[in-house]
Image (cartoon, rainbow, N blue to C red; front, side, top):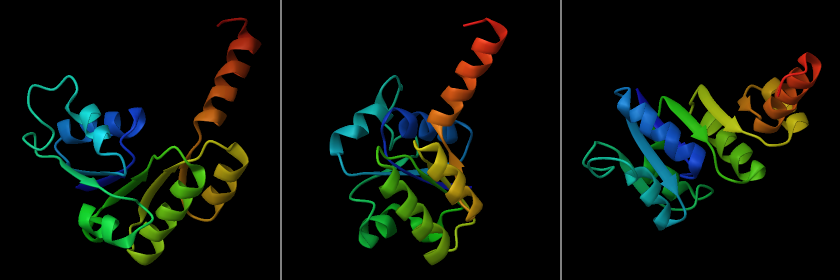
Length: 142
């Protein structure tokens, strides 16, 4: 399976490493060339020597998405720091490139719910944190 991850922050790079270790073909796109260091951190060989691909570019630019491999991606993960960017690029991946499995990180729980109803698979860390706090409070555990 070919996985394209946009955003090589803590989440994106960790997911990329796990997907590559699981035997998937993985490409990462990030605007910051220094974010590549997260992909190499803790590894015995470089990201590329392990079989990964890294592209420097802005995800809102078609050329960068195409260079990163969006046209052949089976899974698209949008994990940049911005909800708006994540939502737009996930919709582009889904609607323009026909990627059915478009997963998007959305910090705003209300927006995550709305876009989820529109067909995007959303993950809201904020919603999960709220649920965990509520659960811990209700049971008296922390």
